[in-house]
Length: 236
Image 1 (cartoon, rainbow, N blue to C red):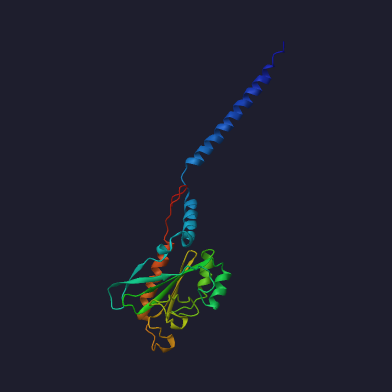
Image 2: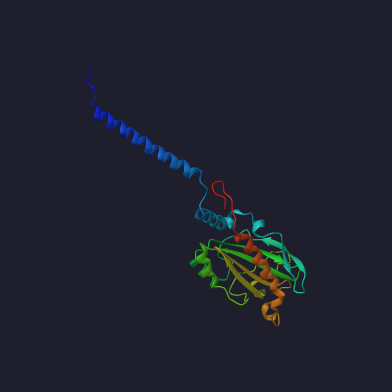
């Protein structure tokens, strides 16, 4: 027959058991709280930023570049520009002039999406480019590589489509340009005339003639950078 365990030993063992159970209960309660709590503001912001940064890659091309974009005409009133085509290529090289490409690569260029539109009167061509940088700071720095004041070069290269109104849209035809930035994106625009007239033969500059083209580019940027996302794990 084994001797009885001393009373102090039993008390110590019981206390240790209760302590372990309490710790396990607290840990379990903490885990349950972590699982059921909603996302913090920082988590929502981070999720929203990730979703915005990936839109260029996961959205269908027609969502980035809608078939029709409205704009304000030079004479007033609302008109609609129609999409001629979207480039299947997304490489940074070839989409911009070499002087700009070096700056984009320095800031971590991930890709350039391009589409060409024609205005309602079918006289002006507009190529819109979405330049994707590694982060917002890189986009801010890369923006400085583009000319200010509406100059078209060095900048985005026009996107021509054989057998369409944009057949003769070459770099020499560029007469206007713009660049704007939000998040990791630059949206760059270049515009020229359908008849293929070189900028050197266009006569006196007409900024108002091409003003609508910047409006088209701003719409594309707004769609890409607008806050708001939804995940199964986080809603933001």
